[in-house]
Every structure is written in C-alpha cells, then in structure tokens.
Length: 149
Length: 214
Image (cartoon, rainbow over all chains, first blue to last red; front, side, top):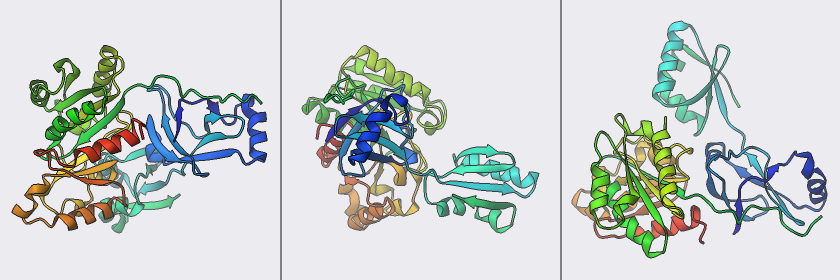
C-alpha cells in the first residue's frame, strides 16, 4: 500500500514538465482512474493502471481534479484521471413537458446541468435505470433523447 | 532529479467520516452501539453524530449507553426528510464533524448515523468518505431486488437481524446472493447486532478502506 495525502499540483504544471517528461520515457507514469461518482471523496483506496495499491486522503478543503499529481519521485509519478463522465441530453417537446421533466428530475434527485433548452443529466448509474424513471414521457414523445455520451 | 520523493504523506489526516443510513428500525443505532467498542478495542479514536427528525433521541441513547464519552456524541436534528441533511445540504453534519475534530484533536473516525429513511437515501460525498446502508431480513427478502439507490450505491450493504431469517420466512442465502448481484459484487456483510455477530468484518473493512491500517 502506498499512502498518499494531498495534491502536489497538476500534471500540466510547468514546474513538473521536465520530470514528468523524463518519467514518461521510462514508463514511470502511473494513472489512477477515479470514477466520476467518487470524485468528491476525501479518502479512497484504488489501484493504478500499473497495479500500485494507493490509499489516498485529501484535506477537507481540497478538491480532486482530473490531472491531479498525487506523488512524484525519481522512479514514479501518480496522476489522477477521471473516468469519462457519462451524460444524457434531453429535450422537452413543449413547456408542459418541460415542467414534467423538471419535476421528475428534481424528485429523483438527478444531478443535472442546463445547456440552452436541453437538460443534461450527469449519470451515476447505467442509463437504462434513468430511462425507466421517465419511460412514459419518452414513449409519448414528450421528452426526446438527444444523445448519450 | 532529486532522489527525494515529493509527497505530503506525513501530514496529519483529518478524521475519516463514515455514514450509516437505512430504513427505520433496520438497526442503525444498534450497529453504532456495536461498532463503538469494536473500534475502541482496536485503538481507534472515535466520535459519533446522530441524525433525528425533530429530537435527539438516538444521540441520548448512545450517550446513555456508557460506551463512549457523552461529549463525543453530537446530535443533528434534520427537521425534514433525513436525506436532506446527508445529501442535498449536508452543512449541519459537516459543521458537527468539524466541531468534533476541533474539540477532540486526534479523533480518527467519526460515525454519522442518518435518521431512518427509505431505500432511496444516499450520502453526499462532500460529507462522508465511506457510507454503509443497513437493511434487515424482517423488512423482506425482496429489498435488494428493488434496487433502491441506498442498496445499490452504498460502499457497503449490511443485512442485519440475520437471526430472524427463519422466523420471517427469508432465504438468507438467496437474499445475500441477490444483494451481491445488484451491487455488481461490491461488499455485502451480514450482522446480528443484538449479539454482536458480523461486526468485526465491518471494522476490518473500515480499517482497510478509510483508516488505511491494512
């Protein structure tokens, strides 16, 4: 187990560029993939893509970011990569449908953001579990799926 | 390049924050009462926050238990659905945890017990580093199949009151298999909090996942 506390900086910081470039050539960069749903954690135990068991803690006021540099030594750097955040874009047919969609999204505590007249749902579970919750709206054409990426 | 590692691993950590949620009567407070001595026996410095609807009933129960210094037990009154103060706006609980850390420097783990809620109850990652969801066999062996967010997303699912299974017609093996299946293989542990069975396995998991002792 490698104990890691806090964020040293970001992998794209100029201060680390030479060291990271050198390590990259020697295969010394290890990526720690963090699921988006766990990005808010202040402690977690995950294994890097090279198999290093990492026990990570952050200060309460630190926010984990994609590209965070957690460890750097002569042989190895450990960098956080967020797994791709899956999103689901929805568009309501009309105002009445938009009200229904908004009511459901709020009631279901979905994490959302707004992009113009689209509701973008940030997925924490397989998309079919979300579709099932608004199936009548989808089947009736009151809400249209724009994309899922 | 210097041979010295660039690391902050020696800096002191704040206390791990561990949530305990689940339906009314599933055994959350009983689990807290079993975890307290089990954690203390392993030399872990702890404090407790309980959440109730409009009283401090659970906090008073833990304070009177004699298991822990009553000063180390804080109460949060939600005043609304319990999930509002552990997920939508956990500010009250975050402040209570910060206050316990200020009053008891060196505290390593804070247990946060939610008020009894439904199967959709989940904890915010802003509040807890790890959270468990407690259900019990008497609530029905179909609970895992209902795939509530609490059951699915918790870091650990605890099935409590396993001693009651034969009395309420529950096939415990099947319930455990279905729970493991809907959780994609993530941990499911069985307990009988009345007799203290299964508690050590939970402490083992906490030591590994958030205390980093193993």
